[in-house]
Image 1 (tube, rainbow, N blue to C red):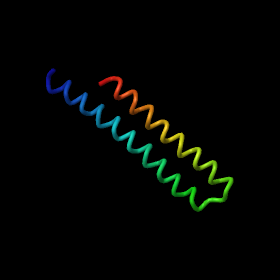
Image 2: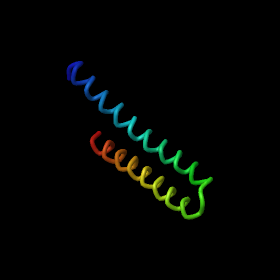
Image 3: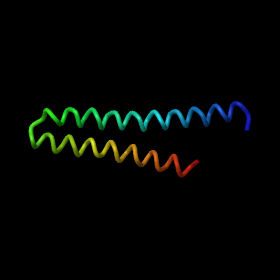
Length: 67
């Protein structure tokens, strides 16, 4: 594998890791906002946070399957 191919794979790995971190951060942010929300809104925000976590989990599983 030459340097160009290595750098492409490194970029993809870093990009994937960045997306995973982004979605986990968004989930944490939404959970923090849920703490101050009304009960109905809190439930909605917690569902949204769970969706962000599930997205990060799917990306992680897909990445691990490719390795």
